[in-house]
Amino acid sequence: MNRHLHTALLIALPMAMAALPAIAAKPASTAPATQAAERDTLDGIVAAALVGALSEQLGGRPVKVRLGRIDVRATSLRDRVVSGQGELQIDGAPEWLGFRFSTLYDSLYESAGYPELSIGTVGPEGRAVPNDSSLIREAEDRVVAQLSREFGYQKVWLQLDRIATVESGRRYLRIDASGTADFGRDGAAPARIEGLYDREQKVWLRVAYVLESALPQPPPSAG
Image 1 (cartoon, rainbow, N blue to C red):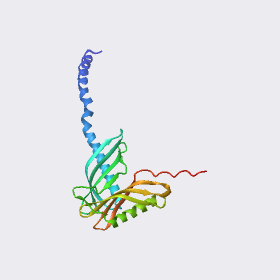
Image 2: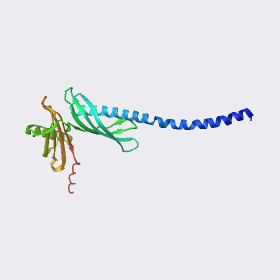
Image 3: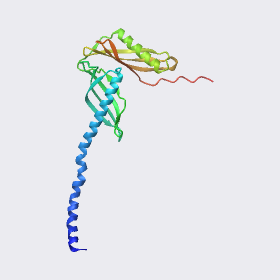
Image 4: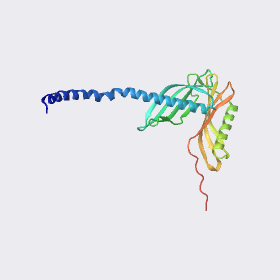
């Protein structure tokens, strides 16, 4: 080997090796920026999913959302449970209404599932008020009609054991109730009802229900 070339190689090799730590450390310095970008993406996608779901739950009315605290919990390499709370403005009304949510986020496909929502949650301006029997009856009728449609238009009886009404500001009433949905021979299931009523417009903005457990299956017929 040429003596001058051999000397150049001996000098270049330590210089190249000295540069290696700087090259290896470079990805670590970009990690916080990458994590921040991923979080920005998650926040934007979840916010868009919330706006769509809230509008749908409120009869297609336009909504604006201000998000507050958001918790993100990893359940696998790609899945996240995202939960939190925020405030909601409905159809340009000056009042802001509290809500809570929980949804699943897929970090691989960058998509959020349909969120679970609780609208009109108790906040600083919320206070308990006496139940209005006519509003409670309207909410019951709406839930019975929804259950009947979902379960093949069969007869449904709804027995509410606990009812609470909370005033959210001066405009909205939130009604929480629980009891039993009775489907006759097909069984019964514990049920929860959540309603939101606009006293200014005198309309129901939302009446939703959740069956706490699956309906029991009817026993098989003999023979």
